[in-house]
Length: 427
View 1: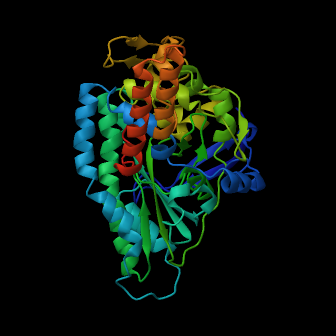
View 2 (view 1 turned 180 degrees about the vertical axis):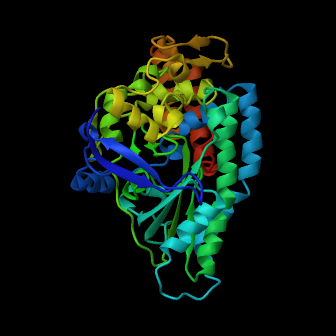
View 3 (view 1 turned 30 degrees about the vertical axis):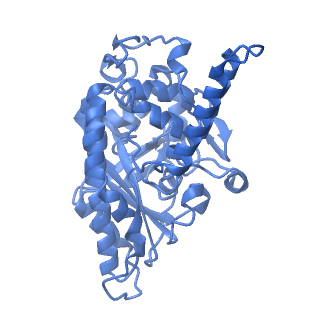
């Protein structure tokens, strides 16, 4: 039996449930939250500000609509129809005036109780760290405090990932979360204060750093927030406010060290997109995701989410996982088909691998599989022009050369004067 370093007590899964005690083995203790160098975080924020996925990777976002399975594309159309009315409401929420009279008293517990009453799995409060705000949203965020809200995604569907059942659970959670966030804003306004909802889909900032700071979890090796009850199986949302609140503090759940022992998500990733070793990135110590190896799998295979599915904390919860480790020194479920097995269903082109992959088995993809449009839409248009120039006969200069240049010009016009990047991040 290993020695317990400390015990973390969290509220139960639903309002009214008994608190849950999570024992953290002494050998897994590191730091509350995540190791970071604040000066480096500030430097990168100032010199290399974060971009939204819809901006930094807009090229593959457009490409994805033509690659997902027919069923995925049909569901995307349905989901977009549900979500579109909420985007303008969420974007304008910060402009609404309070409806009640402020008392000046701390309203932390009122807000947390309301969130749990509505059905959020967990809630924490911290400062809204502007270093993580996306460059094109910096003038959008109005208020200084961040109410961090985690909504649990369907458990049963998630265990079948990659699958449409898991995707319905994923995006169905967004469809529940959007109106819940607006209800929270209305409640804060009734207390006499402003509230501004950020997410789902149309986030104003990278959310995970603030959730970690608010004590709601730690960053996992899969690049996702690991929460104590549901692991990475939560959808995140922030409401900024000027209401008088008390900040929570980061917590050491033991996940930072546990992930280095576990490594199930790293070993089971179909695209080999997760790094086994931690690196320092933008001032934070983390397992860095290789986006270019993750994205092609996620788009072609029903959202993938294998890294979420195979996380022991997703399947069993932190309490059971840590108790098992204390007793045995082993990772609960590791090496078993129940935790590690997954099936890749046929993708649209019919060119790539399908079938069941059990522990120790991984799909193999050729280089062409990972060759997708990269960067912004402007980057992708320029890359197409470069390819055309590379394949032309410079001596004869065929008419196609001018045609490629004109196509490039027309594409840039479409980008500059056409539709803005959608708030939806389904693809």
